[in-house]
Length: 366
Ligand code: G6P
Image 1 (cartoon, rainbow, N blue to C red):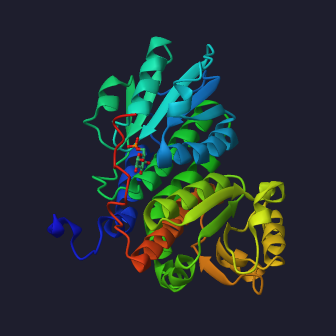
Image 2 (tube, protein in one colour):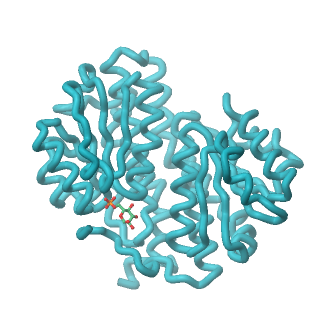
């Protein structure tokens, strides 16, 4: 097994650094690089779909939450994202134009599988976005959409997540085309951004040096707050989950706009707050959240792009700068930064990165 890690110390580290490659592979599966369009997928026509039900657990559910913003923005498609264990037990309502999408790295997570069976009983057509193509979900779904992340060994999901985002961006753009909501020019932009992702993700990995400096400080704290707006809200949730899972530091992800409805009470001198603060239409609002926590003594790290970092000069204790990209798929780049933060804090603390206590790679019993 040691050999498979190559020169890496942990599988998780290897899987983080695999991302340029596997994101490229996943993008190539869904994109036609000659015509610069998203490929048509047999059996996927979302033009008449009234509602997309996305059901998943853990990190896969956060990928679904990010995608919800994309389906709305690109395709005007109503979308509900449900945690499988809640969905299957809460007497969900099904509507006539529903279509279900299940997301799973393993294809074996018990709750997600049972949620899929429940949808089948109600004759809701199901698609499954799956990394392990020889899995129960892949067998039972009406239609399989693969992620091409390759085997993921580290318990905390990394490359499967960014490949899920890549495939979901393609699916949202495809839905946008089918529903007449995006034109050829926008589709081409998205395709180019996706094809440029491997290079940008490689560059995003360069923020590791900055993160290595941050890790010892975070490791001393009992709690870390992540904030973000729009798709960066579920990214904040995913960031907090990663940190909890492998470094055992309590972390919360919050929608920045909810700061005043509770979490600001936690902020006192020295509390680490990590803000997903890329430039864009919501930037000024996010900046005011930064000022609010900073004025109460928080130590604020910003995950941002070059122009965001410039605008925030003097307002952050530290900036982690990710490359510029089409704002739509920026969460893929942010994911790299939040993975590296969790990884380096865990390494600094000496926890078992690939086999964190109490967690299983695949939760096949309830
Ligand atoms: C476990 C893993 C997570 C994963 C979740 C869902 O909790 O530790 O990394 O996100 O299961 O797994 P799935 O295989 O369905 O994506």
